[in-house]
Length: 236
Ligand code: 6GU
Image (tube, rainbow, N blue to C red; front, side, top):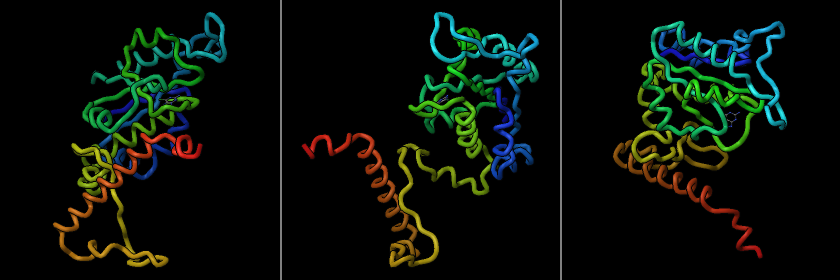
């Protein structure tokens, strides 16, 4: 898979891309990730990429020229068509099913914004798939792009050492369960013992116990998500 990242801060990605999982995936030719600086496509002597919004208001917007021309240049550098993703807090919220779809594409182009956002003509012209990583505001799309890349990379065949580990992940599979409790050595830590069932060697019973744990963890999570603060109703 090829991933192009368009950003004003390509240096932010260097440690991340060289890290263990992605560095190895890059070296073994499983993934080809390239960064391009949007500033390289600014015109004029000051290499300006942002400007004040028409109509007034706080902050600066990314100008359409450098962004659209940068995307068009990167697209044309390889005949393989790319799926253009714009990282923006107003996009659809990322979830595992979207990550699975992205992981099947041969090529992605990730567009990272900064400042207060993009001039809207970028959306009109490029018609990107707009993606957010959650309902909070980051100063730019770079961290969101890294979240997306890491989630995608671990689904690519050969990237994880053990191909079955992604299958057991939280949110994978049909039931969308989160992972339940798991234990490693020692058998006892600060008086807390590993459940006997895991030491029984009975794989059927272990599988059943794990599924129960997973269902319970999923329920606990859903309850904390749907219950508003109990103090508001019970403490009056
Ligand atoms: Cl993709 N970008 C920014 N700037 N903030 C975000 C986000 C993206 N997702 C959540 N918050």
